[in-house]
Length: 275
Image (tube, rainbow, N blue to C red; front, side, top):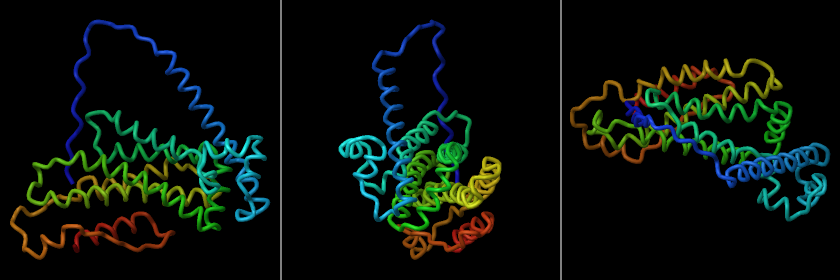
């Protein structure tokens, strides 16, 4: 897999310009902080009720009352009670995208994506008790598990778009149709590595050096996908059958949730080689 490094920023003018943020910017920041605070309060109320009454028996009215707000206030922040236990994902997705947009020109795109997904880990690690309780709850309630999977898919789509935008098309013009597959597999590998470490940390009650574990997992992904995909591709014309099968192909692998990460990566790499 070969990528185009980001373009360098234009040189700054020697002229110094002093600027100040407009009042709307400060007001917008305060509004965003208040919004997140209310979402977290509603989430905390929902989690407590789910733990005491059960998920199915808890109503939106009860969550709103426990948080000291009206029902309409709840629906200004969440569309359903399922969403109430994931109050930070929208803001975290914005922060992850900001990491991608501000990436230095010399950084490998896959490293940038790894830094982006770290915003998700920071979200969980900032409130370990709530994160552990939420993890246990999502294991028990299929509807919540589905909502969590949908959130994960949003990160994968963001990272796939970013990686696809950094391919060097001149390096493999003959098989550029593989780009979407390669970008999606690499992005999925980063997210899978993150989620593998996150689940292990949550099962341990939020204990341990999760950042070191995450860096180790990313090193495996970087070694496997940073230069492996696309390396040594033949420039000779491929048989018609092989060319046709490369278009629209979907890679599916199966692994135990407790399998070592390097074993999962080897399985994916082997499957790609056998395509």
